[in-house]
Image 1: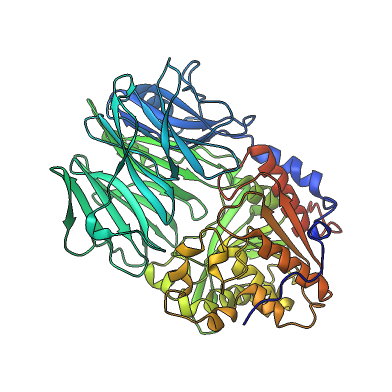
Image 2: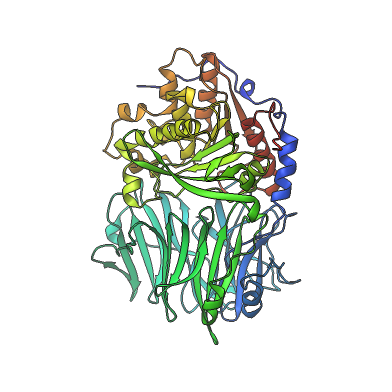
Length: 604
């Protein structure tokens, strides 16, 4: 089965020509909620700490190096965000964005991934305080931070875009590289990396470890010792099992075993069974690390929520009894409330959803009256979908709307079995789950069909657009961002070769089976789209992962069949990190399209 292409519509005529009526209103709301600085997770070595920080007026985060003692004091529980000290910024070449970094064991040099704002491949640069940045010619990395040898004399880089990747070794001295980077061979028995293989490098017990994982198969691992690769036999390390919870992280060290688990009440961080820190149901744990110091140890916790987009707290492990009673600083947290509910799917399985709203709009976990509602989802690759810790969610809620994050099958919210329940031949379940959640929210009085806007990005765009085509009467409006719209011909997408297992295209399904939920193919089977809700399809100008021409075909196909659909193009943007100003403008467009301007802004 093939989707119809072309449709005889000029691409430029598909664009959203004017900003929706409430664009400026939401832009103002977004500026208010973006006024909090964003703190990245530090890396600690020697007596130094390096981390990213973005002030509200900055487009991208910058790198800073400070003393470890200063940062620990600054990030103690209860302290408001404190800007880095003057003169602590590391020099970064112009027109480069920080995509990742690795601090060397001495705490003096940083190997940073620096790339253009509209691309995901980044160059490797060595940064140090008071000296000019030094490039490492040759290797470029796809979001894989370099790995330092324990003695700091070598740096390994996993270079290239999957599946065409290579390992490079760089010899490093006190003043930078001692020679050009050199290719470093893969293990001989690996052969040529193939589609779907996901590689990683790390240091384990003082040796370089190389791991290759193909979804659905056991990982293969090697360590580099005595000048060659040695295969590690035996099964993959078993994850910790905590009944009713998803294990997010497990760290071990001289100060005990730290475990982070997510359950119905939120995320809990424990050490040797004792609770150290708690996050509410809408807060995301984004990173966790341990560090050792002459006077003991510290636990660094990075988290984010709609009220506080990104922050870090440092728990001195000697003082955890006091720290456990405190919470990260927030803003207007009493004005918002978050609840986890269970929604019955058509097959009887309960789908978790996280509902976020103004406290004044909720009574006994029910809305005082139906409100405009933004329903989001992802539903693939075992990814945990939560309330996004972005100003767009807070701006929508503050204006009187309700936000719901649906944790449909295919995601990883309830563990590997939840992913499998919506993967491959089961992919249709994720779409049915979203439809069932939308219907339930209307029946229970959270919103009306006209007031319900569904939004999904990337794989979430697949779920949302397919749901609207299958059940158009369940949604009032639809927004998809960088959507995956063709699941039959996955090779048309930049990263399609890495997605074969997710959709069963590695032998678990046929193209005809995948066409039963592929949005382009669902659309091709329709004669008319008169009843389809208005659809906004947002594409990123330099998207290296999904094929933007599929979005043009999709919008043109809806138009040719009598429906209302538009393209919003973000020129120069990419699938990864984007400039703050353009992201706020983009979010204002999405929110204003989702809102019905006849009833907004809502005051009561």
